[in-house]
Every structure is written in structure tokens, then in C-alpha cells.
Picture 1 (tube, rainbow, N blue to C red):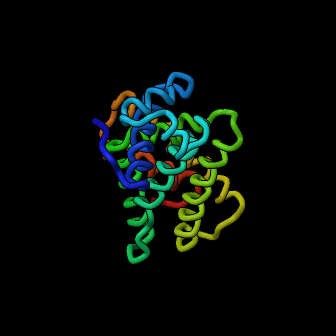
Picture 2 (tube, rainbow, N blue to C red):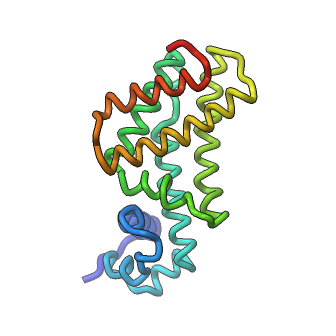
Picture 3 (cartoon, rainbow, N blue to C red):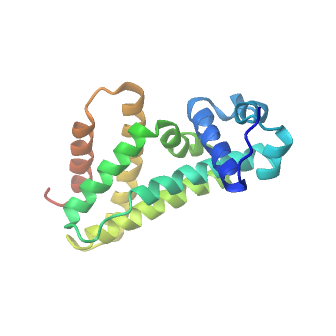
Amino acid sequence: MRTRLRTEQRREQLLTIGARLFGNRPYDEVSIEEVAEIAEVSRGLLYHYFPTKKQFFAEVLRAERDRLLEMSAPDPSLPVREQLSAGLDVYLEFARTHPDGYRIVHRAAGGTDPDLREIREAGMAANAERIVTALGELTTITDATRLAVHGWLMFVSAVILDWLDHRSVSQVELRAMCERALFAAVGIEP
């Protein structure tokens, strides 16, 4: 028997189901029918919320990106190095506790579709700006600094994806490695 949910609750339910399915399987292997079946709603209702599968996927991607950005917002009352460590801790904890969402943002959205890539890149740009702003208290920000931060974010994305798949090092070791890599990339002594 189907449970009646308010509009926003139903939308969130569908996005959660989408994150789980898209996080574990390629886009082409997830069907709208499967999502509707799991949610115990009609396909038509799902299309009411999301007119196409691509739009559904884009909203799943956007929701997971926004959740990660919200959770990793810096605490300006902390010293810069602690802000960076705390941000990494939140990022790693999100990846550990929401691996499907993390994979969607950093793996599934890395394809060739410009709309989906833009959603991911907007999240990366927001993170880069946060980091550059914090680093501005430790060093002069140059174009090279911005480039290094962007490259570091791509590095972090790749190592966390590998870590989720293999867990070959502890979360603490991974955070320390990422911190060292950032400071090395921007030329600051840790």
C-alpha cells in the first residue's frame, strides 16, 4: 500500500532513491520504472516531479552536491589550518557515510554531458573559492595558487573515490595525505 507524502517529502524520497541507485550503477542501468517501483509510486507521478530521466539525474546530482557543500561550510572562527582540516574531515565523513552521493557527484557527473558537468564544476568552484579565501590568510593568492587548488580538488576527488572502493588506508591517513598535498601544491610549509 502506497504511503501518501507531502510534495517535498515525496521529492526527497525520490532523490534519495535516485542517489542510491545512480551511486551504485551506471546511468543507463537505472530505469525510471525501478525508481517508481521502489518508491511505490506510478511512473507518471515520478515524471510529474522530474519530466525526464536526465532531469531526474541532474536533480539527484545537484541535491548531493548541495548537501556536501552545506555540510562542509567552513567555520570562520577557526584558524585557517583548522578550517581546512575540519573541511576535509567533513568531506571524508560525507564520502564514508554517503558513498552513493559522493560517487554521483564525482564519478557519474564527470562524463560528457555539459549540463551535468556544469553541476559538478559549480560545486568544485565553490569549494575552490572557499579554500583560496582561507589560504589568502597564509599566502599571497596568485593564478598559480588558484590552479594548484583546482588541481588539488581533482586529486582529492580521485583519491576519495579510490578509497571508497578499496579502503586501503584509514580515514585519518587519507586526511593527512590530502592536507600535505594541498600545502605542497600551494607552496606553504604545513
